[in-house]
Image (cartoon, rainbow, N blue to C red; front, side, top):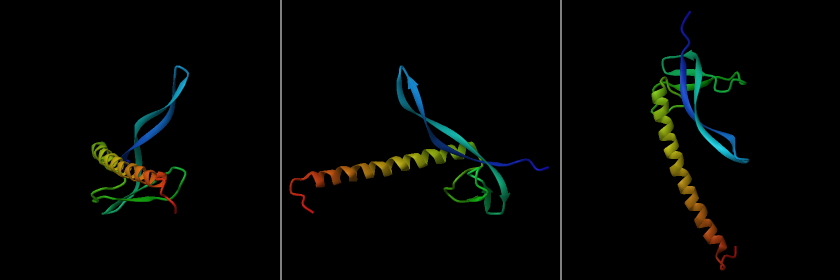
Length: 110
């Protein structure tokens, strides 16, 4: 019998914590492990949602893909993904501040 193969992906996980009668959001990073159900020359097929029978195609040779064959590559991708997410959120924060400035202007009348 062939040994099972897996792909890996790191995800941000949120939970609720409690300390001294105060609640807080507990942030952590979790390693997701996906069993490979099928493999072709160019792709792996995994089931990201255990409750779903639908298989997801993951490219083997893409620069950025959903999951990786090693934990180290998954970690590198998580760092890049999260840094990119921060940059996008900084942009939208800046745009929101500009929009608030526009709408709070006393001359605004649209």
